[in-house]
Image (cartoon, rainbow, N blue to C red):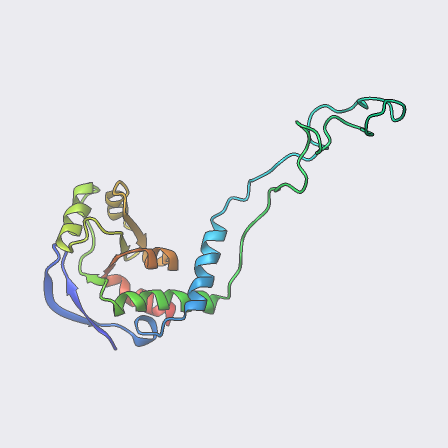
Length: 209
């Protein structure tokens, strides 16, 4: 089992270590599953509200522009034909869902791979007492300074919903705060520094094991 040092909010070691479960934090990276999970997440975030008008939706065009024969010009039945300027669009996008499904076991494997990769490269930090008394932005700024992550993409994972931590991190450009129930592959991999609450470890291992 990988052992990781525990830090306080100031970025100093508490002198304690925590043993992380191999099955969750020490698995081999599966690139194919992780890629599938990222594609699924990004696809599911798409609204799918794109739309264009077909010739039947464009206003006008009820009268035949000219008679069928005798003018010397090509046949035309409507000024809203897709061939005309101002006409409809052929095979344009229409509102639809871009959602992609993925087996639950595969989704959990992808999260385990993402967490394991952060443990392997030393960018995952266990923080004891990851909570703030108020929702001031300076709380998060000072904590990140202690971990030398002020200018890095940081992900803060709390034990359950923590409103003060979430609000304190919301105004910082490269920082995102999540509860342990909202873990996702993209945010973990996208972060250069992952600050994980000590109290959240047991819950994560229980769900992913």
